[in-house]
Image (cartoon, rainbow, N blue to C red; front, side):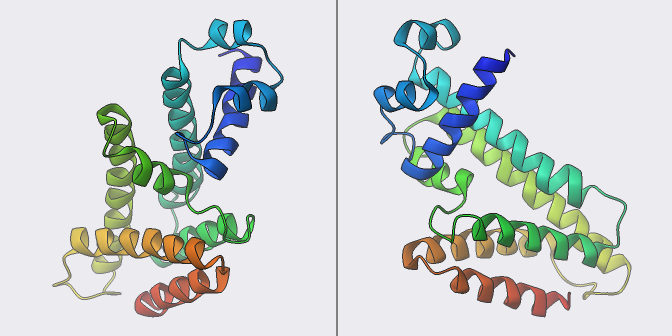
Length: 191
């Protein structure tokens, strides 16, 4: 991928995070990226094509930040969970709790309307559940949580709690709401 195309995708990822996919108009894309229509269509066939590239970019960034750098690392499972929660909180603090989760926002906005976008977003969340489940399975093997615990359900509940907490925080525009939810997850798992 060319550097200019990547720059466009990164800039538009920020626009989508702030305004959403539907509310980001092509004129704003051109203004924010400093390109003309001809150059836009050189890199992308349509706004949808750009949207797909942005979603792929955000998924790659999130997977690298949460999976590659934390959950797939050879660390004790409690350390992995703590680092994951800390990373998510830091990401929210960067924007004072006002923007929410870039993938969660897109999932809410686009899942009902675009099956390809929905599948890409669902795949990311499924991977996240799998990674958390594997971490919980490690905790189960270490005797750190009950051997009777259904780790798939618990992993889903944790992701739902995180994403729901982000939604509440965004709605109230108060990062303390999310900090409280992170603390409750940490308390539950003694991390």
